[in-house]
Amino acid sequence: MLYKVRNIISHTVAYYLKFFYIIIGYSLILLALLAMLNTNSFDIYSGDLFYTLMNSEPNLFVAIIVLLFATAVQSFFSTILIFSIRRELQQGYNRRTNVVDALKEFVWQMFTFNLLLNVVLFVLYIIFTLFGIGFLLPVVYIVILVLTFFTNQSIIIDEFGPLAGIELSSEFVFTHKTLSFFTIFCVFILFLITGLLTFYIPGGYIIGIILVHLFLYPILEILRTIVYMTKFKILDSYL
Image 1 (cartoon, rainbow, N blue to C red):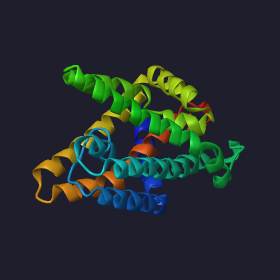
Image 2 (tube, helix red, strand yellow):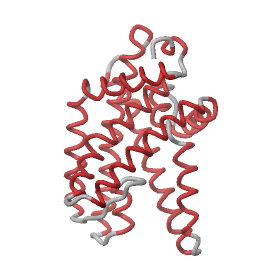
Image 3 (cartoon, rainbow, N blue to C red):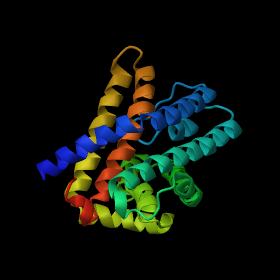
């Protein structure tokens, strides 16, 4: 198990460096979108764009448009990143190798899932707040985010729609508990470090924003993709 974890980490770092040009484009666009909202809100749990929409007071129409566009950008770059890693790992076993074809098929499904997830979290936030049980939100959010943790990966790797992707993600979490726990633990530690930098270091907000979009989100997507690919025994031998 330790050998596999070491290989997963080394592959994650290698693919982060290899696809850094994709990450740069993704990060610059999202940072520009954050600047449009003109706010200092930052959330270490569910993504600052979603948090900003709930907790700041920009023009609501602008905020919704920015959120939609940000989700589209995230879906576009995540599709490219996940598919590129899938193509690398599957090598000769991949029947689909063209990134443009992958975008045509998967980006809309990725957009639908990510937008629906944000909407569900937002609606739950409103409901729980109205009924005065907001203290339960973190628990509900954790359950939802854990069950949907590998949905982006299942949509592109297994080539299913959002609903089947959620089912496959939940199945992977329960059938690969150790690897899933390892991945979620890594994400928790990275978010915790980012949060500490944000709140306790002078200028930490700027550092946190850069770390989240240039490092944390891409590393999370790459790590989840590599871990999810271990479900295929033919790849499991060298991961």
